[in-house]
Length: 301
Image 1: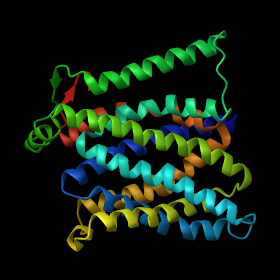
Image 2: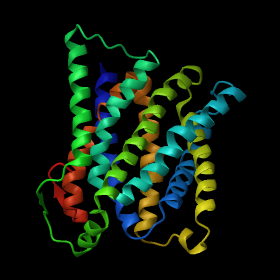
Image 3: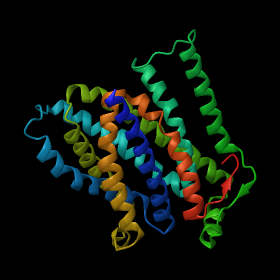
């Protein structure tokens, strides 16, 4: 019972941390930070933070790490983390922090479908839980479609001159819809990460080493992508400003700490339980982005 309570408290903490990620990364991108470079710095910071902890706490008692498992972790890092981060960064430039949090509500549905395909979950339509799951899927998909295609009346809690420029940037309907689909694609990669890591953890249960290796491999992958797309050395510089804060927060707090917490929750309650907690981050992000970033909240979007 104590483990169950701990799992519920951890998912609340995880979603609060992710709400902060949506806000800080959007603010950094609005101030000109390259999203590909951001992804690399985020994963590199997480690696530097986690590697000593993994070595100190788990290395002596860790089971052997076969080459086959290393390859699996490398591929999981690429498809579940690197591609998710890169696509997310592009989508966030096109849209808003609130939209990023809102589309993450599709994560439970995508994760559930993947878990069904891999026979980790069962959908029994003749039972009450099965019907509830089906209704939840329909509502979630309908909500995502509404976010993408419907633009209703809007209101703004505070007046921010900066947001007038931002609103003009994302006002294009084609750009907005493109951003929505990219967000959904990012969430698909993320759901794949949630589901597939459960299989690897069964054979290699050292969670800190497992998480540190993922961050290490992902940082290499993100570096290759970033250096191939952005070779202006000035874009790589980090000063004592919002960019550095965003990198430190996303790398240490989000990737470093939250990835480990998610691994713990998945090990205890499974990937679908973790994915079901994502709607909590939306409520936090809506009001925070309106107050701190001056985002205009639009009904439907």
